[in-house]
Length: 440
Image 1 (cartoon, rainbow, N blue to C red):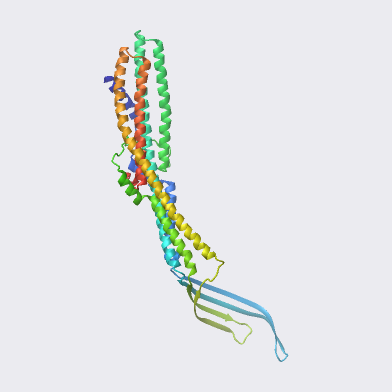
Image 2 (cartoon, rainbow, N blue to C red):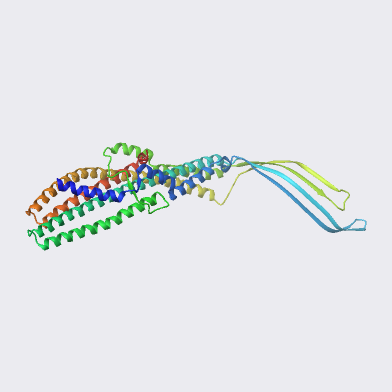
C-alpha cells in the first residue's frame, strides 16, 4: 500500500504541475461561449432574421402600392401651316413645355385568395427559419458536449499512461537495486528499460492527442486563440443511467427538430398547391390617382394651360386558356404534396430507427460499464499482488509486464465504454429534443 500511495502521489504532482495556471473550462461555460461565437450558428441566425423580415403584410400583397411621378419635357420646332384658303404661315423656333406630376395607387382586391395563402406561407417559412436555428443550436451543443468529454477521456488516458510510466520506473528501480545486490541479471535491467521507453513513447503520443482535442474544442467555441490551453472542472465521465425508452420515444415524436421541419415543409407544399389553384380564379384590382400638369406655348393664342384631376378604375379579369399549363402545374403541385408527406413519413421512420439503435447501444454500454469496473478492480488487486511477488523474486519480469498491461488495458477499456455510453446519451437527448438539458 505504501508503494501504491507513492505512485499515485507522484502522478498527482506531475498532473498538477502541468495544469497549473491554465484556463479552467466547465461544460455550461463552453456551451454559452459556443452559442455566442460559433460562425456557422451566426450564419443560420442571419438566415432566420431574413425569414422574419420577409413575414410582412406588404410582402404577402395585402397593402396597396403607391407611386409618385414627375416629368418635365419640352420641344423646339419649326412649323409650316397650310390653310384651306391656300395661304401659308410659318413659325420658327416654337418652344412648348410640359410639366407634370402624379400620384398613383394600385390595390389587389381579389386574386383567388393568393394574398391570404401567401401570408400563411411566409409565416411557415419564418417558423422554418426558427427551427433551422434551433437545429443548428442543438447540433452545435451536441458537438461541444462530445468535444468536452472527448478531452476528458483523452486526459484520463493520458493519466493512465503516466501511471504506466511511473510503474515502469518503479520496476526499473527494483531491477537496478536487485542487480546491484547480485540477485538479478543485466538482461532484466535492460528489459525493464525497454518497457519504460515504450511506455514513455506512448505517453508522448498521447500528449499530441490531448492537444488536438483542446484545439478541436477551441474551434467549436470559435475562440480567437485556438492554441489556448485549458483544464476542465470535470475530471471523469458520468453517464445518466435513468433514460427510459418510452419517454424518449414520446418526446422524440413531439419535439424532434428534423421531424418538425419536415412537417412545416409538408404544410408549405399544401400552400404552394393552393397558390397555383388560385390562378384559376378571377382577379379584381383597383387603381386611382391624381395628376397635375402645366403646358406652355410660345406661338399660340394660349400662353399656358393648367390641368389637374383624379382618376380611378377597376379591372376584372380571368384566364381562359394558357396552353393547359395551369392544369399541368396543379397536377405537379399535387404530386409534390404527396412527396412531402412521404418525406415526413421517411424521416419519422428514420428517427424511430435511430432511437431504437441508440437506446440499444446505450443500454449495452451501461451493462459494460458495470463489467469493466469489476474487471478494473480485479486487475488492480492483481497488480498489487504481482508487485509484492516480483519484489520477492517469485514472479518473472514478463509475467509482471502482462499483469501491468492487463491493468492499463482494463482502465482504457472502461474509459472507452464510458465515453461511448456518454455519446449514446448525448445522441438520445439530441434526437428527443432535450439536448439543452445540459445547458443550465
